[in-house]
Length: 422
Image 1: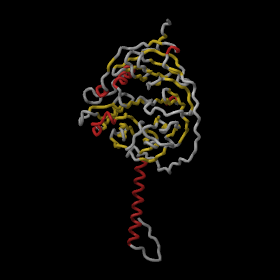
Image 2 (image 1 turned 90 degrees about the vertical axis):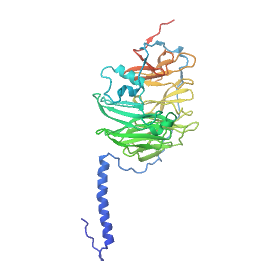
Image 3 (image 1 turned 180 degrees about the horizontal axis):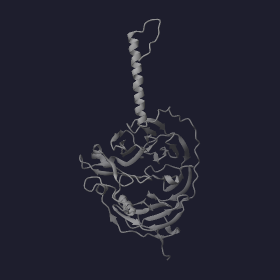
Image 4 (image 1 turned 135 degrees about the vertical axis):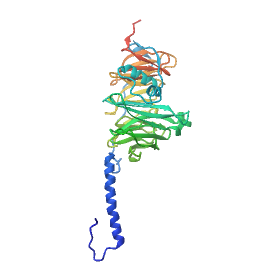
């Protein structure tokens, strides 16, 4: 009911209709607000200020340890399992065409080895035992591409829901445009999975309770890093800034410009709390931006451009590894300091974070590839061991260290034994 307003002249019908429309708008606005609360939409924020000046820390790195010549380090011998070729992931998780319960119940080693062998596009295991896996499945629309299947399992290894993301629109140029896949959890209510393409990020978010699709679509940006979920939002980076997106529509809610221009020559990296960026100039500054405030945390002067395609982050140890020219630098992500430096030559060596040390696989053209055990705090080499011919990659999962060739996987069964002195 609209309250009558006293005027020296009678209220016109046009004014009455205007007041009635205003009251109706207020009712609808309240309803929309309730729906927004139900979906945990963050409150609108003021425009972000970028005026705060944070002085860049000067570059100071220790002398690099040369990994190309292993004679100076303690020699070890690997105790390896037999080489085993594993089926592809869709053959593991849906052998008869239907998604099955988690295939492993007791043998954690077999689980780790099969996952490393089938190579899911994304995998995440939570502390309470829940698991999310995303893998390619043959597309019924086009033989040259694949769709993406996201499967969620509860702590009892039962299927909670699964969802298929149609990627047939990229089938003709699938290999040329594919840049990786990811799983992101913006809240306990949503699980999202998607694919990074050249020029865009395809995404689907699923309601954890109903298993129904909450939203899916293409977000028109890509910078080479996975989308991250936090604070009821999706975080990523376009070419020139940090972006925060609403997971029920993909609409941008906030944007924080980077300090410096991005592009193909710029470095982008991310963990679950921060995005790291260095512009494409000869002596850039590495900047860290947090998700919570979308603010600049620190800046570090770099001696040269980081290799844009090389990324390794051990978030549990606050460690970011950059490759600049032929050297790896371990950056402390809390202190913005350089812990260590490792000379690796022309290789882009894969790394894995174990419980007690880092593992690094140095691949050499004319000699056997080498597996190193590295102290994560100092960069000290604990030991080095030759690997079998054809070893190209390594991984750590469920307390298991694994080596992989093109398809075959071998497990390191125990700590490498000391080699006999000659």
